[in-house]
Image (cartoon, rainbow, N blue to C red; front, side, top):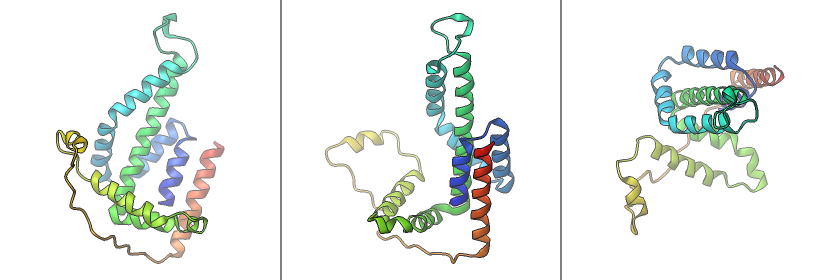
Length: 191
């Protein structure tokens, strides 16, 4: 999860070449992610379109052909870059889901949040809620499910009664990967 987090943060600092390199590395390391990644992109199509329109029309600059209603050149350039970054982040998310799975993500999040427990943060509650969200995201909702959610007495879902976490021991390889991802993030930020 630390490598994924570093990649998602690093995506904000790189251009098209860095994004292409990140996505190519993810696809080469895990060829099975292509189908899931494309499904995520398809599900996010309205978000991508909305993001593009907002940035293209609201970024100051020179309008195309000096038409008042047209997007700006600068806005379109920024919109294209941000949409490409979001698509690359979706590739990273597909890689994370394939690499760790549902239980691995929950366990990883639980482990990463342990240091904030000293601040009074309820780690167990966050992990259980995220587990429920991920469980509901595994399959698309049935057609018309939103009407049932708005009903006076929605149906009660029969979900998992308990959550079991199996923690893997920390190895030297894990420390090396954390250091490598931190160096990669610093390198991306300095470019």
